[in-house]
Length: 172
Image (cartoon, rainbow, N blue to C red):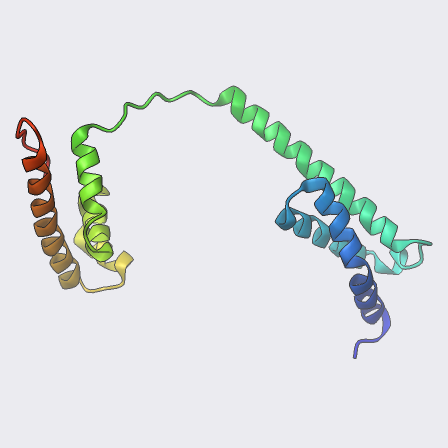
């Protein structure tokens, strides 16, 4: 069992945590953020515990610190949001073409390991050794996945090409 200042603080923390968390949660509306802010307030209380423990209402002091931290966090996020809104350049991106859409649809049909190998090697342009490192498997396994994946994609894209009204070739 803890004794002395550590024991006193542990009892204080257990007794006051629910109310402190409730106050900060009401301010932030986000349970995770409220827990972080409340914990930060308790860290500040612990670092000054010899002084804070002598206050008439140390729990009120912790709630006050937590409230100020929450407001400060909110202000910083507002400033950052405003800065991003002012400095963000609108990027106009063309919608994907039919070939890209067909490829993505076909990729979703093949096994996940084959899809990852194809995307990492062909679309992300990574060498086989790097794909093997990322996938935690030998290079030979990556080669096999690529071979099987390309074969499956060719069949899927050929089926989709047959469904095209003009029989236009698709990217394989």
